[in-house]
Image (cartoon, rainbow, N blue to C red; front, side, top):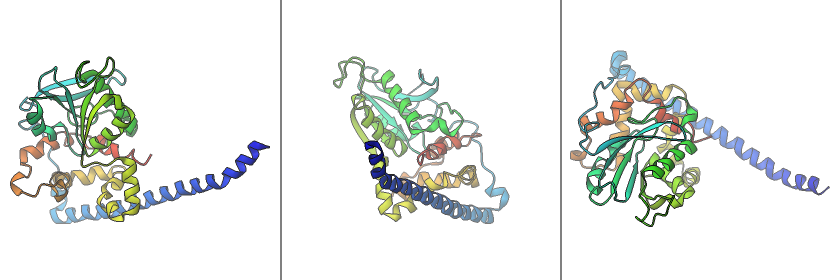
Length: 302
């Protein structure tokens, strides 16, 4: 009798929650369709402006540009994760016994975006710039499910467990190595959640241009202008079309992501040079290189 009463009392709440989920799904579906049309029109414009030969061709970078793989900014290493068997690539600089500073990049970047920080902070820290799974020189498992947030967080947790500051530094205790965790864009989103879920592994948290996912969702719901700025996230929910649009005209849209006004670089003298752009495009231009980073976004509405 009591159970039946509780079920009846909860029925309106359950109905409202189900309605909320339905409205959210419909809103996302509408945003995905609108983004597909808008970016599709952009792609059509590129096709008309450059012609089929110019718009639908891109250059596969056969050799890594200077600085990407030659040890200019640090020692290249690979870490085989015990949990998944996946091999992640990283670049490290600084004394091996110094406190670990772990750097997590965003989209559409790789470890190279931290090259200046590797040089700047390596006198005081063991600075490690990681290629997240599917990016840069790290392994790229197939399938959208391989890039769920919880899987990405487990990668980072294990990296800290292996490379983290030894006992005696920064207050680290036996079995709980620590690091200074720095994240930008997607790396910042993951850093927020790693620090919340495993505070014992993080001594200090530094976030660059990234909000917590829950905060971002609430803010976007009340600020439609933010939805426009984040429209590419809805585009990335579609199959195949994002990869086609991003690769058009030798990755014109990717170059816009990397050099657009939202990067905060106002001085033209500080714009990325062609070799620096190629440091990011080298991996993305390889066959299938765009899909793993885009799969990060294909899991955010799950």
